[in-house]
Image (cartoon, rainbow, N blue to C red; front, side, top):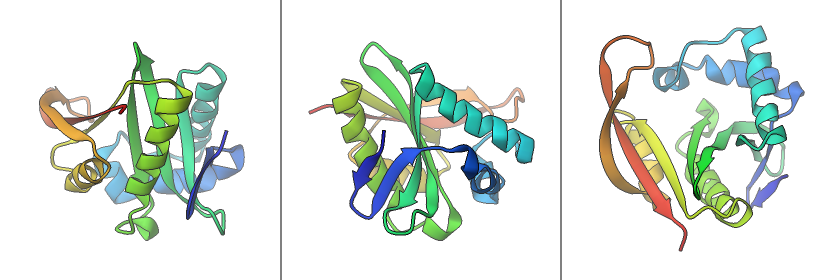
Length: 170
């Protein structure tokens, strides 16, 4: 399953993508908002997990690529599909930041999820301090639904403030 989105192509992750995925998941800005850093074997397991999600319909992960060069620019995934609602999350590599890649991919995957998965709502959660993700969500029409207190990524006892954005199928 691939999604043509103008200058972007969204495609499932491949085992050959392990190096770029591992590099991305060790990027300081991505790590700032995500769990622990990964080593190469963890990258292989991460890729295997993305592929397995497609096999059992539990999640639908795409590599965001440049439609012309095929270069991987980021990641976007729809998961937790229950009762007509799903959750979307994404990250973008440093060279692709600030160029509208995340918003363009989010628009495309939202259209796909509403049509292909027959969702009525997509949720997007991010750390409230992640202002870039907040801008992407708002640019793509995801309204801020509420603020949540969630356990911190590091497993500590502290909580972090999280924004819950939502987009309903029109």
